[in-house]
Amino acid sequence: MEFVSVFDMFKIGLGPSSSHTMGPWTAARRFLAELRREGLLDRVARARVDLYGSLAKTGKGHGTDLAVTLGLCDWDATVCDPAALHPTVAEIRAEKLLPLAGGRPIRFEPEDVAFHYDESLPFHPNALTFTATFDDGSTRAETYYSVGGGFVVQEGEDAEADAARSGPAVPFPIETAADLLGHCRDAGLSIAEVVLRNERAVRDETAIRDGLARIWNAMRDSAFRGAYSREAFLPGGLRVSRRAPRLNQSLLGERTEAGGRDVDSWVAAIRATGGEFDAALKWLACLALAVNEENAAFGRVVTAPTNGAAGVIPAVLLHQVAFHPEGERAVEPFLLTAAVVGALFKKRATLSAAMGGCQAEIGVSSSMAAAGMAATLGGAPARALMAAEIAMEHHLGLTCDPVGGLVQVPCIERNTMGAVKAVTAAQLALEGDPSRAKVSLDDVVATMWRTALDMNAKYKETSEGGLAVQIPVNVIEC
Image (cartoon, rainbow, N blue to C red; front, side, top):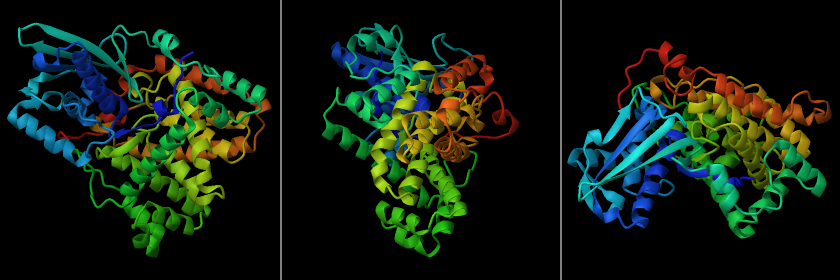
């Protein structure tokens, strides 16, 4: 069985899209690594990138062209300066020179990133091909597929077979929710404990806890930056206003300035608002908006499990840390529980909106958050999985129709809806009886996948259906 680590599900990167930005960026660096491994990198005279399907149709709004350009420069999206992205690409375009792998400049024309709007490759809608032309005129081409959540598969690569051959031997193999529940029951462990023991097969406990802390800090930081941003509008041609700063100020009132000192001061200020129903609901909205406004502005976020849905889990977890007694003690078990639920959808359905619509992004993130919340509020494993099922059940069929190909309308608001549904699902599960449930999590994963296969292609991140064609826009390049 394929092992999907918590650190596969949660990756620190840049907005606005895990499949259209982070995946192509990763593919570009993989192509460079292959050329380097074969001793061909120093012979490259020209590089070309061909984008197909959804990567072509919504690529400019998602920054796919920026991503592949910086990927060919071998920039690391986890640590690079987000403020340097656009100026660097502008300089490359103006000079028509690209520092390949950060070194020797090669000629790079605008047409070297080609958008094939009417052509798709059969394996997946998110396809791209890199072609290197060498100093003797010969070429080398490789095709990659960005399959959702920042995961990349190379043409001809059998992901499941490779995982079976080279994946770690973990004590609790998990392919279905039934597998997970059986391990918890037989070993007398919580979901988080089962996941932690599997992670120990890959890295030591210090590395696991340090990694989870980095993920949590990156989530908090993205929410904090979004809540205190001084930018009035998001980039692109829609002129979408940032709303999180105004909502943050409205909720904090006189505490706004004190909360702006640092992240810890901000969380303390949030906690001091008391968490009454109206305020708690508004905080969920504010936190989700804050993260996804950062994402839309090419800021640093955590793919959870995608960038377009990156606000749901931080919003629910920050809400829980601020307003429930366990505070930050909830962070590790929440993330471990949420990650394994996301892995079930990755294995048996999809995390790609281009393949499954927004149910594969907001739906999965809401399901993950619901399980994490239910588990850390004392819910037994069956109740946590019941929460995950309820959350996804009420996202089934959700389409992906980004206006102007930007991760802004309706994407940002959908994170607030996903967060609210996650909390509601967790509360229902904690008061429910899993033994009487009519639908299991495995049932809803299978249904989500069948729904994805049946969904009309124009509602799968093409900007050819739904709100994307209902709202007339004139979008300029980001």
